[in-house]
Length: 168
Image 1 (cartoon, rainbow, N blue to C red):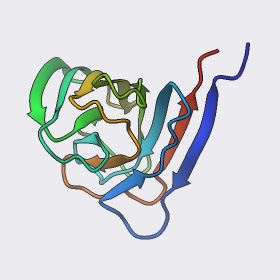
Image 2 (cartoon, rainbow, N blue to C red; image 1 turned 180 degrees about the vertical axis):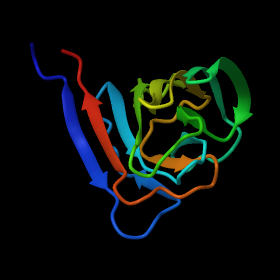
Image 3 (cartoon, rainbow, N blue to C red; image 1 turned 45 degrees about the horizontal axis):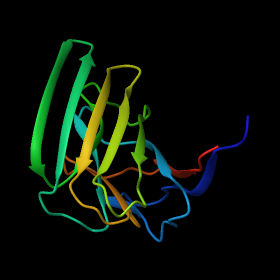
């Protein structure tokens, strides 16, 4: 089987907490992207991991997600929001267990279609959340900003890796 995942960039946060991390100068030489985010946050805080493209903070995104939690389940949909959810962690969070999200960003360099993101994220101790997001913009994606909805900081040890996918 030919190799189709190519590492573009990876980073592990160290030192002071940061409000976000951004991949910049993403090359347009692949068909799709895969973002793997292993995020540490604050103890006992629920949070949702978010992404934004090309510094777009407008209400140009929508999300549909489901969640399976230790205490039950649920689903939700939101439109006209300034982000795409890629992972949701509900309660019982500790600083030594990361929330991991894997986001597939399809047709990211195509300039004739909106961008679709299919992700799953959570923590083995608390929940799992499949999510579908849409960026209502036809621009090629050249940067991805990762942050947390709750306003909590990304903690030291959080790791982000971006892969490019080439058609086999």
